Image (cartoon, rainbow, N blue to C red):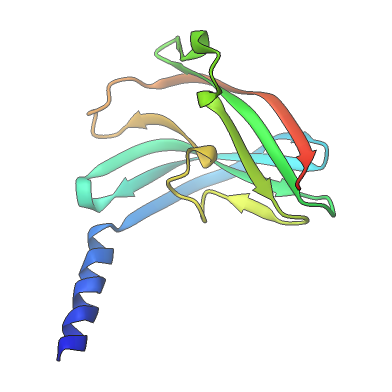
Length: 144
């Protein structure tokens, strides 16, 4: 009986954090040195706190026979104003390890900011909306 209660509690805890990501079309954004960056617009919903965001989601495909480390910066414009452009910090620098001949994707990492960009809040709790973005300083190196 105790075991059944534990299973029920664990099941309810997973349900309370249920999330859903729906991406409509995912298309190539840029190809560089055997790595294809894909982007697609979609929705991120989390039922536990009524979150409903539109986001851009990324997949990174390594078409080479070696593991690579991909580094890049995001230049984000919300309501026409560049977000943290003046700071020159590493805060906007992202990196992702992509194994040889494989894909690293938002599907495996739904909360990792490497794989998404916030566009807008469908509940209008966050007022700012993405008006433009660029991936900059894209660098690919052999993984160690």
